[in-house]
Image (tube, rainbow, N blue to C red; front, side, top):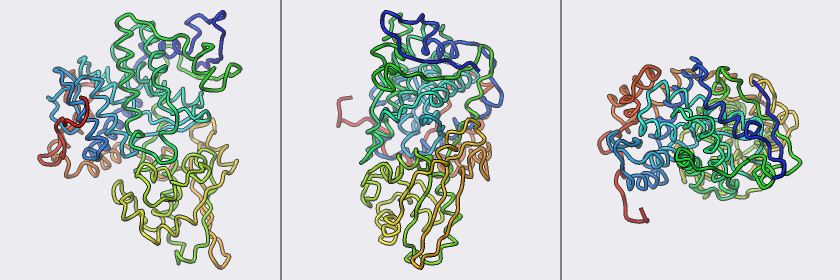
Length: 502
């Protein structure tokens, strides 16, 4: 790996393009490094994972909305849309829009946490859509996905966005553009222009994840993926982008991040070095924001030690700054205690999630967020007794340089009415690579089968799983078939509607 220092330059002192971060990203994408077999196998796992959570969300309103918009843009050959026949192709950017929204809706796919947050599986829908429309084979698809993960994870390690209230999709635009460029075999100059364009148009504020969180949380990465496709298309036509997008005196670092005196360090692979960053990322066993995954497992373990819920005086969750500030009481969001809050808000409330996991000893992507569940009086009482507190040691562990030592958990302190205390802690979720039960291929398949049961036929399930697991060796026709058609009667809305413009 080589560490690149990124800082602001005046227009009179613009660095050569070869010294700019966007060029270095493009060089990683254009480099014909061999595909690492372990990384390719993990990419297959994440394709299965994405499909599972997309189908589980297939009838939710935001997903149906995105699908209806996509259906207004048919194309043959085009990109397949989850839930529809693979033959019902749409324009690639709209396929990415529909499928990206479906993948993100339940907050149930993979994650990476470092200086910033990332759901690197969000790279898969735009790359897959372009692979289907542009007729690329399985090995090309996997290689592009692995490179996109490499870039987004490097950016998340090196550049903090959330401190400036910039949404993490600002790292997704460049990684998706680079992955698409790699898929199409484009040269570094073309990818460089696409990366800059994608970053320029995909920066947005974190208000999409603050206060009363709306359905835009699901659409946001799909939008970045759609913009990345358009950026690559424009660059392929010879058009240029705002440059240098990171280092310019009116660029992202100077005005959206740490300012003209900032210096960031981003580590990227050397030419020919295997791309293995995907192996540092992790998926979810529970449908909730990742920083609550360990909290849910901790609650399952702790609940048997609490004899009387009404005798609980208070619960304090000692955790990292990130967890406290994003999903805890450090956010200052009263909506995180509102029983009538949106699902998107509840899945970003550590206090709600911990209360329900304590009471139920289980977590379900639908039932755990149902209005009747959120408004249950005993849960509301317990919920409002829970708070979070930042602990510097948990913050240090969150940022540990060694991936095996990073911790995204907490210590829970339960104070009973009689003054007694019950304590327990968990560093990482059970499904994390360093957890008690790390996810392997069989777990991804079980998750897929559980989430898609009744929504696709058993034959469709077997077809997709068999195809996905053979991806390194399949041709373009099989990549075009890498989608899932709903079982008869399972898809509630499979047509365009006339409520909007499209």
